[in-house]
Amino acid sequence: MIDATTHIRVARPSRDLAAAERFYVDGLGLAVLWRTTDPAPGKHELLMVGPAGGGWHFELTRDPAAERPIEPSPTVDDLFVVYLGRPVDEALVDRLLAAGGTRVPAHNPYWDTYGVTVADPDGYRLVLCSRSWG
Image 1 (cartoon, rainbow, N blue to C red):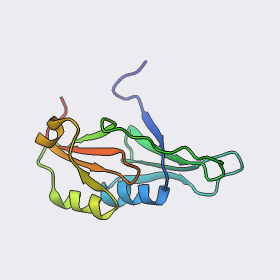
Image 2: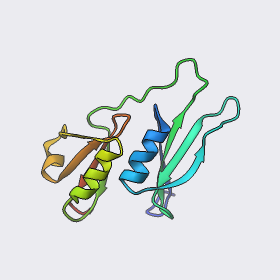
Image 3: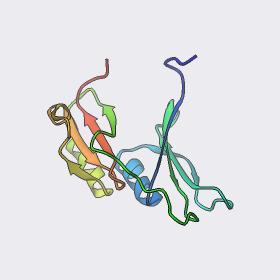
């Protein structure tokens, strides 16, 4: 049964795992939960980031041996929303920008009203929302 304690993994490809790590770890403050940089034949390079002890994480993958590696294909509505429950700290935004992010206008104006949207190095959008969840 799926409930509030169910663990979740969101997986997606990345062009550059080191750049993704800088953004999500140095910029956002997540922890590296697992890393594989020298995969066995037929395996992928892998970076898992998330809150230490949390019930979710990102799995970012890259297949360096593939003739045509999978390219990230984010849309303007592929969002990772973090509900902060307080105004967005500009120092956090500055860290994300220094770590390779790009501040972008939200496709949905709701997110500009209640937060800040930053694209990660692969173009996926992180929304820092000042509202609380629920």
